[in-house]
Length: 194
Length: 286
Image (cartoon, rainbow over all chains, first blue to last red; front, side):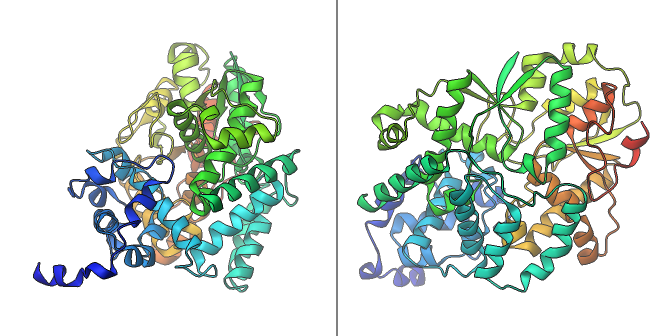
């Protein structure tokens, strides 16, 4: 315990980190966490995480911004909400994980060429382009950002879908993509101004 | 009964069979679906990864479009359902007019009153149509068919208005009415890994192996699912799982609408049965 306290050098902590996380929509009750570990026990991925969900919540409260945003934990979250529905203090843990991902991206704690940020940003780009998802273009973008040879590995999968009539060759678009893009731009501006 | 229908992106591609069978079954049950005009993607977990506020905004657009067409929204995909429900619940606590998102929506000519109710088609069939009405339409009871009802995560979580988050029973009760025998299934809401299949494949394969292992040990003939991503992970990656773990799984993963449709005597081709990577097995011979 003494060692843990020594590691917590006050000048390295960010007291503004918890309020920053609390600014995200729907995020509340982090301060009420009783560190019971029900989240970690419920998580299907906690066995591969270096910092468990319970630990991460405490690290946010303490203000360990660098460690939290460098942590791989949010990227292992499957967004299954098992933790959220079981938390006795109603901490929306899944939403916290998503907020941490977006903070790690915005504050450049992760490379956009890493698998996870590359996949989610590619998906989001396709949405912005067509208003709807389209797997072939998503796969190409994802491969382009990470490792183009991964596309070779995806060919049997894509072919398997195609011969079963489960792959659309041409994107399906929303009619008013212009309106959707305008809305997305307004939200981006909102986020810059805070 | 009339609903505004939100198909979601998967229904136009990898889960076409879900859309086809849902329309067929719901229409036979007297439910009318009218597709939402100009819907956009719900963003799955990608948009909320880039920006939780953005995810809320694009789903607010969907809700605002839906309420122009009706008062109840029908959704097949659990991920779309969860995102739209999340937005719906958010704007129930804070009226859109009082948020900057409400202002942004007005700039693109939309006004969100948050009047629409968000429903998964499983809820519509079990609660709105009702199990008695379903029972009256069963023509070919699925005698001897052992089904593992796999709900996945997002149909019941973070919350819905019709079932339990950890041990839901709606699909079991429905397929029991259809004459099938639902098996006990501890992992019915254990996650399939969703998009981790793209970003953390080895771990996602392990999650799916565990689920399939229990299906086999329970003696089920088929797994019934209600989400396109669960279907894709459990079905299209079964070969990869077998190669990685030396298993010999050959378990058909069908949408609950396809199984129900067979019991209602609908044509299997019209229910798009047989589009899975794993052949439909026993269901094909019923």
